[in-house]
Structure formats: C-alpha cells, structure tokens
Length: 296
Image (tube, rainbow, N blue to C red; front, side):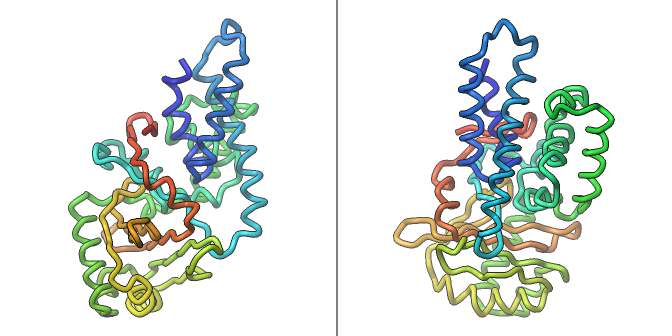
C-alpha cells in the first residue's frame, strides 16, 4: 500500500516544502510511522498516509521559516528536471502547481493555508478529508482555501504556454543574451517582469529581486551575459516548463527557468546557483499530472 502511495505523497511534500530533499525526508518519516502501525486499525490507508505526511510537512515548514531568516539573498524552490514524458497541458491545475512561479506564490500563505489549498485545489481531496487531516472543521478548511486563493490570485503566474511558444521564447531569450542587446531582450519581457537569483550565499548571485523591463533587460544583457561567458548551455525541462542548465567542467552550476504572463511574454526569470539546490537535477523525475505524483 505504501509504495503505491509514495509518488503522490512525494508530489504533495515537494509542493509543500519546495525542496526535494526535505520532501523525501517527510515521506520517509511517513513510511516509518506506517511500519509501526497496526494496519487493521486503519479504515482508510490513503487518508491516513496523507495526514501523516502533511503534518510532517507542516513541521518542516516551521523549521524552514527559521532557516529562511538567515538565508542569504532571494530564496527560490529547488528546481526539478522532469522527464520527457511529462505533458504540461495534460492537466493545467497540476502542471501549473509545479512551476517555480506558483511555488513562490505559495510562500505568501501560512502553513495550514498552503496545506488546505494544495490538498483541495491541486490534489482534489474532499473537504471532509482535508478537515480530518488538519484536525479542523469543514467550514474552517473552506475558509483556509478561500483565503489562500485570494492571496495567490495571480492568473499570469499560473499560465503555462504551449511547448512551442516556450521553445521559441527561450531560444529568442538566449539569442538576445548572446548578442547583449537590451532592445532584443526588452521585446520579450513584460513591463512588470521580475528577476530572481538564488545563490544561498554559496556562490555569485544577485542579492535582491530586480523588477521592471528596463532594469531586468540591462542586468541580463550586461551582467548575466558576462557571468556565463560562453559556458555550455543545455535545454532542460524544469518544473514543467522549458529551461536551461549551464555547465562548468560537466557539472551543472546554474539552472534558469522562465514564467509567462497571459500574453505569452516573460514575466519571471528564475536563476538558481546554490549548489545544494542543483543536486536533484542530476536525476530526471516523472510527473503524473492526473494525480500530482512524482517518482524517479
């Protein structure tokens, strides 16, 4: 039973925590609890496992909040490389809920708001089961989900353009980066575009979030271009969207992914350079958009 549930639990835990290592720890703790249990006492094994895993994640979010207070520079969720069998259009709710932009929106929520919203809106859990998992009443869970939806009401950040559009935009972005043309870059960006770079204090990265087409275009054209300096660049499916990885001595040193507004322009550029967060990219994961499950 547990091994059948593991991929779905991992998908839930990663979305909750934004870290594959932490998600795997939460799922392993759930497994250990399951091993100790008298299985005959459990009426609904799936609901029980979801409850245990969710509560492990809630504990993890409290610990993560304390760590974030000392985190150097902007924080970006750990990027995942998805295998080529993932279709981002198969189920838009779950495909969108894996993108970097959406995971960052979840950071606006309290831990219980995040749990209630993911369980109900992404994993389709009945309110009665959400209430049991969070040890709350059904009306309270409805309020959590409603409040969460208002906090993250940003349709643009949940927009997943067709793969062909992503491919064209990423190619145009790289061409503009190579040419160093701020004009070319500006034509690809939305007016409210944001640039975030996560080095975690372990490597070179911009220590603040840049906002606005002009500032972002200048930084990318003048600074980012010089930092990468002709290093090998490979395409990669990152969190359900087309992105790239930059190599140095055959090792991934940078992962870049983009988000788009409703008109298909780039409204977010996310650059992860923290080496601790790049380890998971070595192993492609499969994603089932019908269940939200993740597995190797």
